[in-house]
Length: 167
Image (cartoon, rainbow, N blue to C red; front, side, top):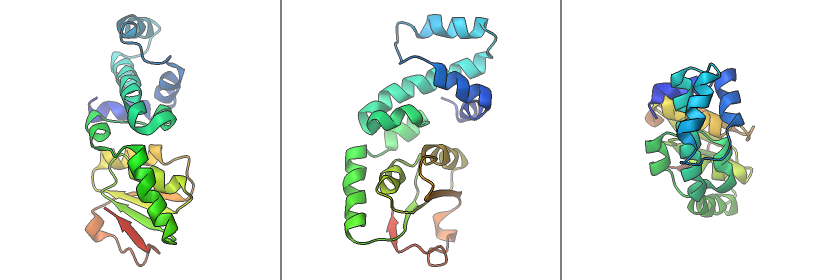
């Protein structure tokens, strides 16, 4: 999905439309798209929502049930770490007694989700604005996670209370 189309989903109308979609079925995608456009939804919004629906279906293999509440780009999904691997890494940080982790180059936030899922405070950083926006959405269920759109080299980790880094 073109990154500018992701922004269409970050509106009340876009989020509501995406939330209302049934599970992805390739044989129903065209009729569903036509029906949504006939209901008055813009073609760009319909394309964005249906693309996200398809990406969420693909993402289930990596993120399990979390995928249905996350947002993706095709590249971000492809580059994301599988949740089982991220969970293993996160468990190692938790076992080490870490109090706050910086996920530098967080992408869509997959590893940060696993860290935050173990109640570790997380500072997720990515210099790509679209990736940081998706990470923000994907980390919304975790109040102890924050996202910054910045170059990781410009972040003062000591000032932020970070005692471990994932990169």
